[in-house]
Length: 632
Image (cartoon, rainbow, N blue to C red; front, side, top):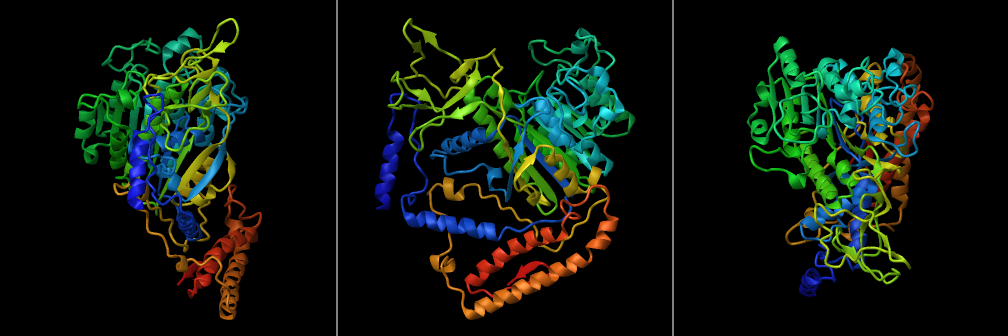
């Protein structure tokens, strides 16, 4: 029977539609048509959920991954593409962060825009304050291009970078865009215009009283204290050019800010290195390097699909992050590292779907490499997006259809195929009028998976200007205090959770951890051994007798349940007795809901523990609660 299914899978791989690019990839799960497969798998999911612990300790380190433009549709497409690169259908797989124990939704609007840009969103999740479109590091009282307002002290915001450095943590940023681009700029700069990356733009607009973003990176705190800076942007910093590219933001003042950066480190007596290619990065000794600047592009770094893999070429994002972590992990006070997959966004603006999904997979592989280097008992790891895009995933392709391929649908009035992936607007608009009706291109035989293929768009836009999308994005979290992401949140909440978890910034004097004795938050990367293994074997699951969903509660079990619940309520009452004293010590930024309703927080904890205990009791296990922990 199994052999027959495998033979069917082989046939599926060979089936082609009229488009030569539309391969049907097989499912890796031979048993998925069986009811028992899904019941076993879902029992395991329930077990995982019931056993999910909370890590309420302090985060020594914060590792923050940002997929620029990586909305939920983009993530879904990236997940499928990841699987199809390995020869299977992909829908059943996952990106690394999709296995994190805690997930929430983030509202992305800017103060003045329903659909946001990366500057206003970056300010929100890095400073904890909502801002206007196009502005970085300044409050909502500063509108786009209002230089004078951005200079007022009350309008200038500190970010998680400043908070971390004030706490003695080492800090770094790694991006695939310019190091002066919107996301990294929101980490350190204060500017009324995200595009004031070099002095030339500001001279042209007669706003020379403000400082360009590149100078802020090199001259001002907290940026000048960054231990690691990697990305693109040689042009904006006035560095010696290594390639011929269009001059979009050259320096008029003739300054080489890379040399000035190096001179500053020299004056501090610190070791430092400036690298521009893969070989130089890999040859670097992190143990003897205090400060590192790596600029791997005149403007942005190359797309993954265009990257030169030679030693003199551009390093992978994974290699940049591994080096950054080796440098930052030397700090006994911990670290903060921002990692941005910025070219996801750039490729989507160009409606290049293949480039976008390749960038998502690159970020996924980088995340796995980073997880291999940190300890989730003391490291908070977050993955989110700043906003979405107008990418859509249309119906109804067969399961395993090439995610970059075409679809035939008999409800289409012109009888032509279309791609699964299309955009609501963008440069891929391609419609004509034949005098009687609208005509679109016939994609039969077209390589829609080519890196330069422009996906069809409904509304024409200037080249490279497909817009962002305004729906919520996901945030995935693991490590200390990651359970604070639990519902739909404002984007500003991200900065506050990072600060609260690490006891820094506005929460530096409020490091109350009422449940330090709970089990640590354990994350095990399950990189699809069940999904992508060579033999496509099914993962081990509990036998049905081990998880009996209809097991009756005996009299003894019912008595035991009452005893366990009583123990937990007694502990909650003890915690309540100390609430008054703890409240007196609490500063202006209390633990979420701690002072408002101490008991409501306790009930939440008891409810989660109760579910675990109930599950164990149903299985006939003996359980006790000691200091809030379930002990077998």
